[in-house]
Amino acid sequence: MGKGGTLSDNVVKKIVLSYTYVAIWIFLSFTVIVYNKYILDRKMYNWPYPISLTMIHMAFCSSLAYLLVRVFKVVEPAAISFDLYCKSVLPIGALYSLSLWLSNSAYIYLSVSFIQMLKALMPVAVYSIGVLFKKEGFKSETMTNMVSISIGVAIAAYGEAKFDAWGVSLQLGAVAFEATRLVMIQILLTSKGITLNPITSLYYVAPCCLAFLFAPWLFVEYPLLKETSSFHFDYMIFGTNSFCAFALNLAVFLLVGKTSALTMNVAGVVKDWLLIAFSWSVIKDTVTPVNLVGYGVAFLGVAYYNHSKLQALKAKEAQKKAAQRDEESGRLLEDREGEDMGRKNESQS
Image (cartoon, rainbow, N blue to C red; front, side, top):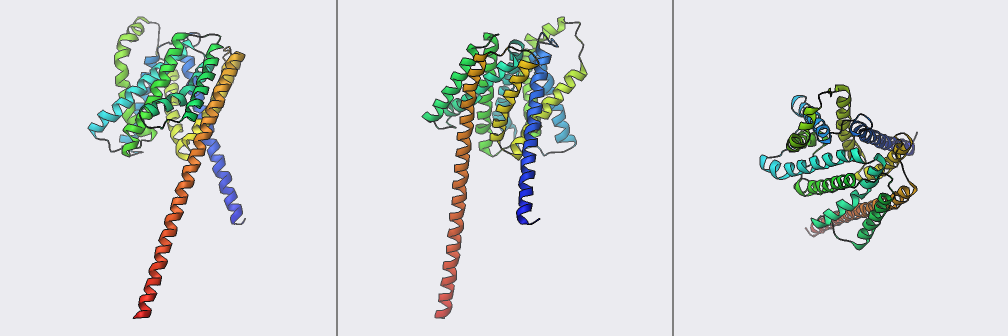
């Protein structure tokens, strides 16, 4: 095959790999969500202790991350001073612990399908908090888009057959804390040139989460667990569940690192529809026509938001390439002028 054929093969390989990364992420995300629902739901495994489950995940991830960083030295730890750790990593860890606690708690009260519909509000929360902290510029067009997503979610909530106000409050709180965490990562770490891969991220953040969750666990769930003498810790269930949670973190890094964060957002929409279909067909959750209409409106809003971000990224990339071309042209012009000047000097001498 000629050069064109080789290029075509490379493009095909890249596309296949991208779809593979997307499939792995969707599968693991799907598995963790359904597995957590199975453990926490009172009608299934019936272990309604979200703080305890989150702490098990964080303890497992902390231990595995420590082994990979300090013992096996798979990755190098980031250069984070104690002062930076206290000012940056601790607040991010606190927000992450609250996000995980509330999102896991919501599975006790809400169906998987409705939770995915509520998660469509994530772009709204990230954009709003970004504007509040001046990381995003206010644009009326973008805000109109955010309002359309919110209206869609509100319609879906109105049509929810098993609406639970407390469950909705928990999930909305989880969305707010997660959005704040994402913005804080930009402000406290990325802006200082510090990037963490999933292993180093868990190495630094997971122990923080474990520490922050200990106090509420001690007062809220420990007394209840102490009274439940019939419970026996199932290492297979909780071990495989924790491993899936750890693997999901690695899959996020793989997907974003090999494709882009935008690809993950688009893949997330596909995953949400799959979960809604699974929740309706297998778990037998009630999904009403109003649910679907509302989520359809929100879905279109999220799709437009992702499209706008893609166009902005393309425009930014085009500007960057144009600037590089101008710089190269300027250098060539300077070199040519230098050569002409050299020839002129030689002829005069």
